[in-house]
Length: 117
Length: 115
Image (cartoon, rainbow over the protein chains, first blue to last red):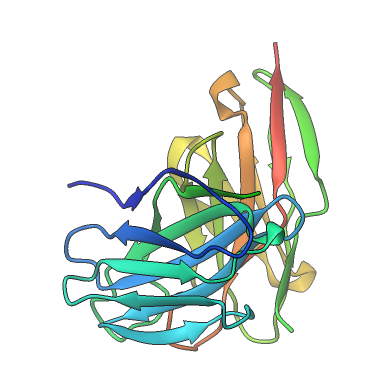
């Protein structure tokens, strides 16, 4: 079974631009979570989508948004990019077969490395 | 607020020696705890997880972790380290009984293995 895939793997943007990152979960997985990883702040939860609905949201400004499609693929968008948005963005998927609690194992993709100049 | 602390930023261990990576959590109820490993340029791979029951948890690649409620700790151990274990290790906690998969991560411990 194919793992979590993220595209693109690398991205360079300039301040003020917007960017869209894509995540394809493992087949059959219904939950997709996004995390930001930076050297200073470490790994921080952005948001989670389950059945096309945002179920949880971390403490990030409204410039960060996401969505999930009916096939469980997810995109995240960052508008008005700032230098501090440079990070590795990781996507994780989980099966969520039962009650939707996070006892399901999360499987991470390789990430998208975003550089903002 | 819930938090996860990994006191050691960087650890160097000789190949073949034993390893213990420390993790402390802060959460009132029984936490859901995880250890992940990240190699350079890679995503995170789950090593093991603890939800309830036996406090000694076995994982992949010969790793184990012990949950100690009295010490609020979930330390990762391996009896004999291999050079391929060099990577960054993250301890994480789930948010109690809230539905969803949000994880709170520690800042990570970088493991170097010397020959």
